[in-house]
Length: 407
Image (cartoon, rainbow, N blue to C red; front, side, top):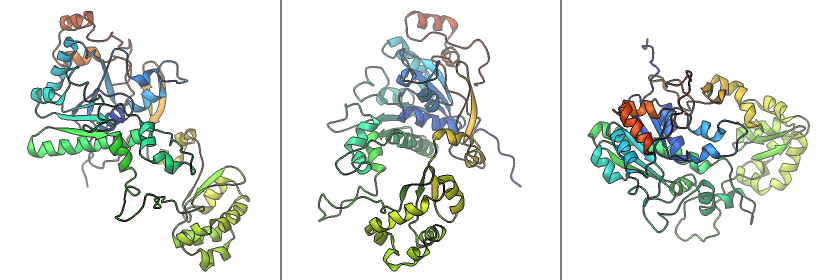
């Protein structure tokens, strides 16, 4: 019998400094926090941009809460030498630093790799940029939907001649996964060699990595070669008696089951439709018959009827996911406590570890909530902290007056 696992996570004991804003860097650090790392989010005096995004929450934004779980919050004005010295002391005991400044900015605010690696040679230094560390666009600010537009994602998403954005910041979130993946790999390398190193993640590379199946150009092919991987009109959203359902019936087995359950068995046995390619070519014949049959029941009813025999999903809202039995069974939603927002439910722990389960997540920090505590942990006295506050190097004390449920 296995020993009882201890909830500390595989990155327990790793200290991460998160100097990044928006999504890619911050959510990458949240993922590291999911794995048990201790993450300190360092914000400028104006706060992370997402704190000021539109939200129906009065005291904080959903964007900030959702992207910055598992972090302690510190405010430093890195434009000031005194704040840079605070950062340098924090770097001495850190394992990882993540930022998304443009290459020209880091030397000015004292957090370039050369300087920080000299302070701590074991540091894993992860930079998140729009376009990478080299090339003519290296100093240009990059954003998710800008990179979607640049790299062809919008062309494939929309109808011919009408590009469409894929909403949900998919490039940012994929880049965040690469941040966690790259940092974890660098930590593994350091474990074996003792060496720290610089890790570079870009939105450009992330956007192209997401399209690896399209990003193949064989010798002799023209620009107009077909790169669309969609399998025709059968796979996709279809209207029902009430709501829409998404069907994916590409294999012979699933295609046969779909036709049988729709009472279209003759169509399932028709050799003209016995491959994905044939069905795509004859979608104009097939789709009207499918949609007529689907009008007999609601999307939820079809989903239940198809069960495991036909890959499908009724179209739902994100609100439906909070209480979906599969989400609850996988423990993907938990309750957080925030000093200003109060209690709320949110996402937690996308990866399950059998031997090193992740610790219980906690809410994103209030602005500057842990500045005093973090500075004390790094050896700053109360007099030091008072001087830093007086010169504007650190932010105001926003610690809640009561226990907030966070470590």
